[in-house]
Length: 332
Image (cartoon, rainbow, N blue to C red; front, top):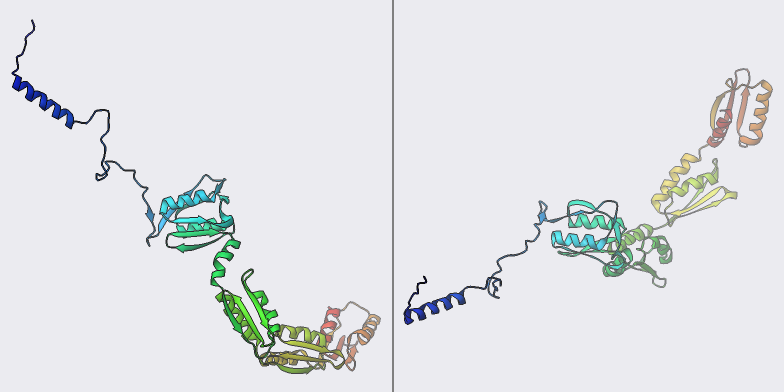
């Protein structure tokens, strides 16, 4: 048996109104709530936790499958993800493949240095948050040229043309240059500041007052003495041998001339007396006489004193040091 509930009209109206209000306030079950522009999102994607060195520098870990070539751009993207710092490849460095890196907790500078070393690239820091990796040509054109300065160097004692020849090799390739104004004896040097300073110092060293000294070689071999003096000559200095006069004409700084003079005194010594033991020679008396004749014709100098004492088995020789050296080699 069904039972009917009788509701008064006023009560029914109130119930219907309450149900309508509740339906309006409740969201649809299948539709997610809409977050307004002024409301905060209930969920967010968590950013990767960053690591820092003890001095506060962000660190990156670059570990790729070993034994493979990795595009440089992929590695640079990983650095940016780890540190928030941009490393940009420019010029021919873009798209370069390099061996798989295995770097853990490296600073950006350490990572960039390693990457650049794999392809002989250049790198520099453009700003606190931007590093650049590029090829040498692009680096020269975009960076080195910004640092170039120009200066004028005027030597006093040497011609500018000669000085320029001696320092030309010091200039930076594709960046520096040296122009010469022969009329004013000036060098116009264009290069990086550190190179300009080095060229200035080199010209100053070359630009010293030159002295002339004539060495007369009385005893030694003049050509050999000159060859040794070459080691004491400065780049702008000059040495000239006059064989007929047995003279060496030296033009150089006062200090170098003094050094040469000391060497000449050591090398150009007069005759010395030495006694050689012939008993150790396994030769007969006739062979000793042949040896004596060979020494007289081919080895000893004119005016030298030589005596063979066959009874005592010795040879007495008074001659120049270089002759004694030849004799000793023969007897040995």
